Image (cartoon, rainbow, N blue to C red):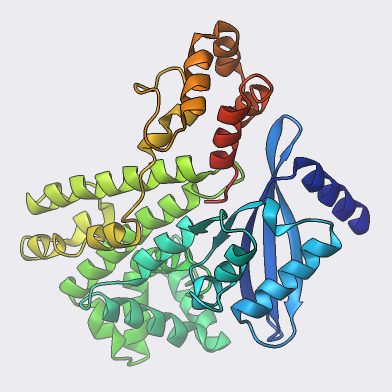
Length: 379
């Protein structure tokens, strides 16, 4: 069954001719390096996303080794790098290094390939780069959790205490570095169980009990939990099969605008957007929080995120301009013709975006090809 599915997917990619790759290497529980890849391709009347392969990296996880393993699989499947339109990676040195990186080797075979630094990974980097006065808070939370969960007997005692005090939860959650959403979940759980945790750590004569007794430390914990909650929501919304560069860019830009709005409200003392922080912050802490928001890091990691010139792809019938510098005369001509075609206008209202452009490829091949190349890459 597995071989049959693989042969069907490879056959569809060969028929499609164009495909986009998304790759990442990671070390499994046994210590072996594994390279995983997803593929996006045109399948009939829609753009499909599928698992491509999982291959072991026998020795080093260098860019050259990743390129070699990927190339061998493509050759076995009868695929060519020349048909690969884009590559999405995590931005690591092995992937994007200038001389020996995976991307540079791909560009030697196909100079026109589009390279995308994964939106989810960039958003995680924003979450990782905390201000200096908040880093100790996250570290202390991780140590508290490890102190309670390091021995089964302590975990059982803490669960009994939580039940006795009528807490909503009975266990703490581990922070796992590789699971990007774990920070927010761990912080929220510790904040919700802070009273139970303070009693437990006091009984255990741990110094961490003093932190939980501090209003300022709890305020910073609440702020971190709120920020990571919003970042986790953004991360979750950018996941899924229907995501592309246009939709992910919209969500990032929307979040950046929202952060700027929050900044203004925080400076005026309004903390409605931070529900946990609002419960425990009083006067002196409010002004300090105005300097902590992740606005600067968002601008750094998403400095060049703009898709206004591609509005015609989203809706060719409402875009104000016929086309900018990035469109050839032939593409502008086809776009002008498409806008006057009422039949396609009616189809646009009924079909998904990818299906609409694939449907219009026979009559407007150059314009449709450009639109499909915009929707195909992984974000």
